[in-house]
Length: 413
Image (cartoon, rainbow, N blue to C red; front, side, top):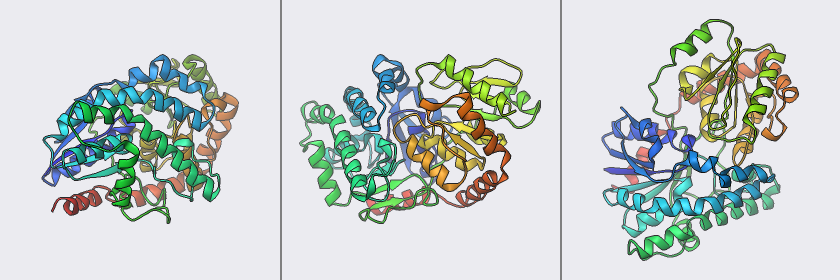
């Protein structure tokens, strides 16, 4: 069948769907990934087609409104700012999403665009299902990931999850209006449409493992955990990086992915001081944060593949986004998460609970004095590596694509 996968956001919100799409393509489906144009290269050679949408998430993150997220010190404050920022972006993407869906047999919508994706599918009389990288549905078992994941008790957790759901509905108000006025679709509002789909038990598969986040017992039927969708990436490491790795003991990778920071120069200096205080070499990824350092014991890299690099690290320091957290777990190495915003705190807490890290060091508290002890413990205590390796071996036995393929068969007989 002709399968359209819709997603939006940073690289970590896109890359997992390249691997899922490649797996579905190998099963004989015609798969098209619909997302920001800057990510077209991610599907090269995978057998997955690409349909670009407007909006450059990198430019948005570096805009004045994007940088204003750092002004909020609470998860709810950051979420409200993000909702305001995302409303115009969702409207801009709507036409391209509709165009791609018109040639499809089924729509698969990532969590970032789920309300819009299922509305488009309903407007075109197409079946659809959700493909989420985070556990977005309310539960009493843990705090809402997009608010940082801190538990507020059973009732508080559910209320926090409902608050996030309501905020996400607001993101797509303009986009829904555009579907009605520009594309002639007769649709209810985002909130009413969501409630109707919940009553109908709209199927959602989650791209993480139950070994990492067990399925909440209070979730409704239709919300299932599929397993990780590993990105399609056949790249090798650049020669300069290979030379650095060969020139000394295993270094520590430090990267914040798509997260931005208020003062990249200061933070880079703190990272280098922490590495040296712990007696470790470093591979610093520039990323969207703009980190950089120039020294014999440190190398700065751009966009490099995680799969061939992380297993060769003494530890990985990262922003605890869903995609990078998955890559670290797959690699079987100790980690020190540096949660920046949104779901970072949730994934960092899961890593602590799994015993693959001694502690998280939130960005707002990241100094050399805070990071160095965490690095020493992560790299010197073999228990962290042993637990990480044991978990990685179990994750390698899972197949996250198979449940999605089976769900497609049920959705479109």
